[in-house]
Image 1 (cartoon, rainbow, N blue to C red):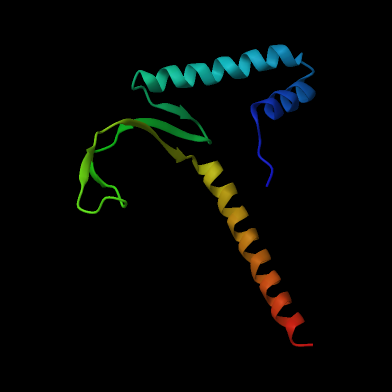
Image 2 (cartoon, one colour):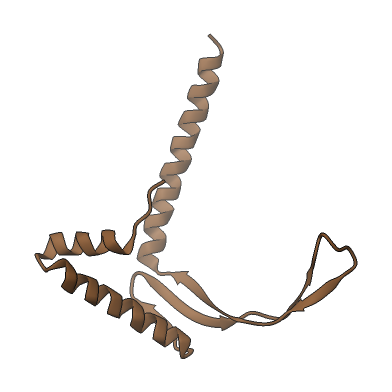
Length: 117
């Protein structure tokens, strides 16, 4: 499955706006840097209709090495980023979920029907 990269985003915006790719790259990179800086300073980032990035601290927990039964160690708490999708994104992804489910059901019915002949 293909993935969307920063370069793909820059090229798409450049083609849509007529701006030079170098300028678009600079804007995209500065946006990502600002988001990263805010999260690193424990400031949540809210992008309407997209979602909210929120820094959080995981709890300390006990880890075990499956290769050494009986030994355990404490995994210390650490900072991570939680993402909660916004309403518009959630609705569009749910629509994709329904489409993928329907396609999967069609494929399984076609495979089941093809085995009978």
